[in-house]
Length: 325
Image 1 (spheres, one colour):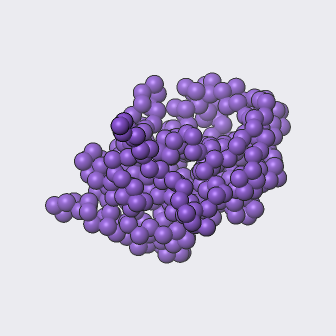
Image 2 (cartoon, rainbow, N blue to C red; image 1 turned 30 degrees about the vertical axis):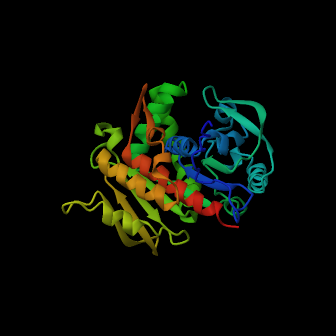
Image 3 (cartoon, rainbow, N blue to C red; image 1 turned 90 degrees about the horizontal axis):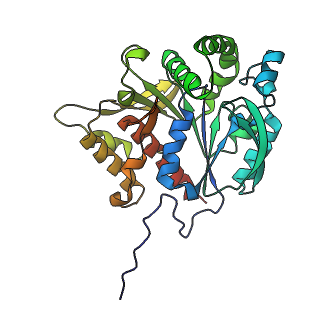
């Protein structure tokens, strides 16, 4: 008799007591903060057949040329269909399909809309995902990306000149023009999130090994992180702590801070990944480590252990939300 191979477990495998509506994860941050990179790893962990990824940049009201004429940036809510975004987030949270607008980043054009069907997990990334309370209330887990400004500007220069047909001088001018709107509309969303992710280095951004960035996670008490103490203790080897957990305050409120060293060894990273994965009740052998922590640096695909751990931590929160009825 032929043996039937069992399908590997999934972080959102259906079982009695699990809810049927999608889990909505929000990833918000300024332009070039790393939203798409973080999203890709999460999609890879779950599998594309289980995840719907939506970018709120698609809700821009004006194309690139019109924005120039109107002297408005895409960070300004007036440049976006906020009401439609609210309506679509609500529909997705209820498991309903939407006819989503499409913005073409390569040439800054408004393209034909597309039908989007929500799967088990919906990842919504973009600039203004938490701008209104109605939008925020749709999410199960809200993440904000908060890299140091010098590093974000470095990333934006790399991306916009290589992928979005901008000249260097255009990017610099665009950054300066956007700064007031970043301050007014993007950064205030940080206070409404459950997890703040800050990739950072110990030196100038242009001298950084992009695969060795440290990460600092601000974890607000609205979400449970029961395995983090175990995580920090198990990685304490010979007095070295590549992963540290401490109590702190953020905006005057108590939070947990998880610090992950960027130079984490592959062996230590594998052990930490196993702790997180097994904490979700899953078999460690089912984790495809080659699918996480990946990012583009020019034409090269590199791996970051701190990025991989961040993606797994977010998946663990999604898995917890999925078991909530």
